[in-house]
Image (cartoon, rainbow, N blue to C red; front, side, top):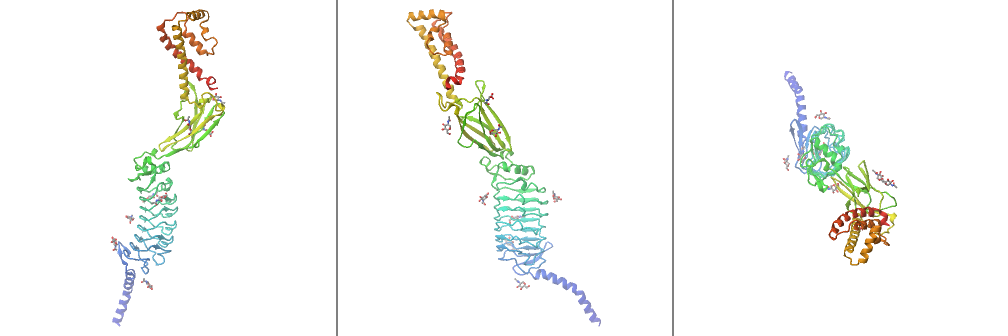
Amino acid sequence: MEHKSWTTWMRIACIPLALLTTTVADFTTECQRPCDCRWQSGNKAAICSNSSLKVVPANLSNDIQILDLSNNNLQQLHQEAFKKVGLSNLKKLFLKECNIEVVHKTAFVTLAIMIELDLSKNRIRSLHPDTFKGTEKLRLINLSNNFIDKLEDGIFRNLKFLQKVEASNNRIHRIGTKAFVNLPQLKILRFNGNNLSHMKPETLMGLRNLSGLDLHNNPWRCDCNLQTFRDWVISHNLYTPPTSCAVPPSVQDKLWNELDSSNFACRPTILEPVPDATVKSYDENVTLTCKVVGNPPPEVGWRFNGKTIEMKAFGEIRYTVAENTMDLIRWVNLTIIYARYSDRGNYTCVAENPGGRDEKTLTLVLSRYGGVGTIAGMDTDSFAILVGCLTAIVIIFGAALVVCYFTTQNNEIKRLIKNDARSSNGDVLIEGSEASETEKAMKMEVNPVSKPPRKYEAPQSFTSEATEMSELNRTLLDNESVLGE
Ligand SMILES: *[C@@H]1O[C@H](CO)[C@@H](O)[C@H](O)[C@H]1NC(C)=O
Ligand SMILES: *[C@@H]1O[C@H](CO)[C@@H](O)[C@H](O)[C@H]1NC(C)=O
Ligand SMILES: *[C@@H]1O[C@H](CO)[C@@H](O)[C@H](O)[C@H]1NC(C)=O
Ligand SMILES: *[C@@H]1O[C@H](CO)[C@@H](O)[C@H](O)[C@H]1NC(C)=O
Ligand SMILES: *[C@@H]1O[C@H](CO)[C@@H](O)[C@H](O)[C@H]1NC(C)=O
Ligand SMILES: *[C@@H]1O[C@H](CO)[C@@H](O)[C@H](O)[C@H]1NC(C)=O
Ligand SMILES: *[C@@H]1O[C@H](CO)[C@@H](O)[C@H](O)[C@H]1NC(C)=O
Ligand SMILES: *[C@@H]1O[C@H](CO)[C@@H](O)[C@H](O)[C@H]1NC(C)=O
């Protein structure tokens, strides 16, 4: 009796012990090859790495918290891949180097307490935006060394505990502006070794706890579209070397932090005039318009037949310029005041900013002149030369007269001139000719009547005459009606 009751007591006492032993046995004994199940830093771990597993092993205990499947040949993570094998308590899942190409959007469903996921060194090309829908406790996602080409909007949504995303060495060329929203804990982001050339500022600017950002080894296009993002990176001390520019050529291989913000510029583009434009005008004042986009707003100027335009010519305002800038569009309108024949020709609008330069040329045709006239198509330079030539001809003609006067042996003429000079200030010389006022004036100068000229005095008076004459001629020639028509 006594013995019997002792045995009973022993049995009763042994029940919890047996139960405990059974539980322990579940976690380790259910573990089948090639997995090795053991405690790892307080968690039940199944180490199944370096095998040739093609599927997630079944029959692992539901209690497993750490599953290491690294270096297997899974190729695909099917629909509900972990739910199907009864794993729902995983905290850490290692799927590194598993030749995974496809991850089904529901593969991780039921892994509601998973905090770490390593998918690195696989062949994943894309991830569905719902991939992490059920894994709200994730703190670390490692996607590095895959072939992912874009991160879709919403892919990391609701991951309130997410601290770190590694996506280094993929082919990412686009990140949705809503891929990284509402992630209050996100601290580290790695995008080095991707195909990023641009980044909308709003993509990451909402991440207030971000303290580490790797962006190097990407083909960044350092233009005005990247400027705000670059400035944000620098001002938040998130720059890590050697983040550099790939294009445009002017900043190629330059580091972001060594360039000035203004170097992140967009080359100006002239929208008007269009290439090979011809402007025909009947107007007295002709306005030529230049419309440019560029960021920052470019310096814009006009050139005429390849030369910088002088606003004034011979003290007269010849051109005015009206300009304004709105929403990165800049107008610079050149008005030619009282357009004259010599204003025909090629006008070039030139725009330049730190991003580069553009120019467009238009041909101005002044219909008023209809293509006839003695100096058709003449530019300002030729015009100046013509003025000079005519002046010179008049001077030479004058000089010849002087010489004639002193060298002529014909006393008859000499006397006649002298007599005439006394009575009518030498008008006889030009009598019957069609000489202009200028010539008259000149001849009066050449033939001073009050004092008989001496031969060697001629050069002196010649010089002063020349100066006065060119003044006169200039005034005269500047008058369009004399020569233009
Ligand atoms: C698996 O192989 C890697 C090298 O390929 C090695 O570093 C690692 O320790 C191995 N793991 C196991 C559990 O044998
Ligand atoms: C897993 O357990 C089931 C029974 O629960 C058994 O039929 C199956 O063969 C086991 N699978 C493996 C791979 O051991
Ligand atoms: C992510 O994976 C890469 C490649 O396997 C590895 O070098 C890196 O250390 C991993 N990052 C983290 C935070 O585990
Ligand atoms: C940043 O992280 C800390 C804890 O790491 C948290 O207390 C804080 O709320 C976070 N900041 C923001 C803006 O969410
Ligand atoms: C990088 O992205 C561009 C598009 O932005 C694409 O044309 C190119 O093929 C990509 N390069 C690689 C290596 O993926
Ligand atoms: C041309 O411009 C001049 C100077 O600005 C002005 O006085 C004149 O009225 C203009 N002519 C016409 C037809 O607008
Ligand atoms: C320049 O000319 C264009 C076309 O006529 C006009 O739309 C624009 O307002 C002008 N801009 C200025 C500053 O005059
Ligand atoms: C203006 O441009 C046209 C063609 O672009 C050229 O044939 C012509 O010689 C130019 N005229 C002047 C005066 O430069």
